[in-house]
Length: 115
Image (tube, rainbow, N blue to C red; front, side, top):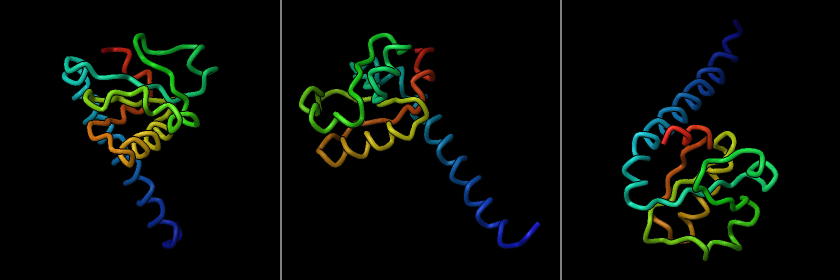
């Protein structure tokens, strides 16, 4: 294998492992967050959400989150989810930059079905 390809491949593997580990850490917290009254915010599109979703979750598509931020309670934990974890990661950063403190990226909404 070409030596110049090894480092990017290692970086990609490390990035994927880090994302999986952080998602695992959040999923361990979900039961206690729900006991604290956590809000589950699904940032997928309306169409995606209408096909299937976690019962009790609220659909606020990522592109309208900034305009609907006042619908969220900053006194309760917030769990964001989407189809893969990318949009929910962006949503988490948006909420944190707007003063929210207890925001957790659960990644895929399907991972919340067991709770």
